[in-house]
Image 1: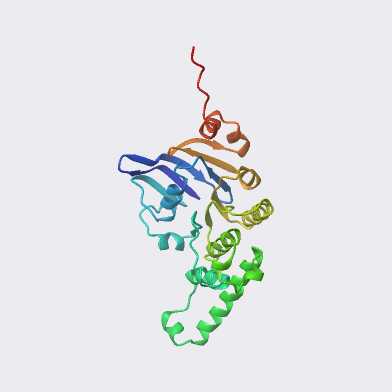
Image 2: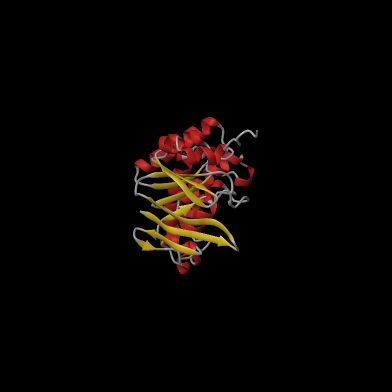
Length: 255
């Protein structure tokens, strides 16, 4: 589904992402891990169109997308969440999710301005769909609560609901369990596994390795912008380069 081919992003002389190549197969959940500053969020920004690569290609179903703007990439079926939550804090949970629904709305500006029956029917349908998404993420009791009044973990779930409201084929999640306790994290893992069962493909950045082991089919590891390992969670966990990247190496004692 998604192919990164020698993808690089340089800021001056610094390589945030350096010649990274890997594939995300349709129907997979792929984890993207690495120490802080490894280039994970930069890579997601490139895939979602928020940034442009210095060189290399990004292919969605074999078609290049690295030249497209974020809204065009979203229309092709890629949605994302953010490391730093970007919700409309004064709007309710339901209103935030309906914003996502509107990217797939069919009503014209003319129909909306005149409140024609076609527009009202669509708004009713979108509201019902948004409410179902909210329920699926355990947020029903907060449906009419401004998102700014919610806990950090609940806001994370709202952001996931809004991304899903665009009906993506590929969902990019940037640290989705941040601010969640162990029980909430486990429930989110089960929810994401359910999304995969429904045909959704997921690329997820996460530091919680219990979560990665729970949901991921494959794991890709970055360090200093370079791909250092890929494979199943068990294979990656046992990789010496990954162990060194996370734990460092002990210096030999001096004589």
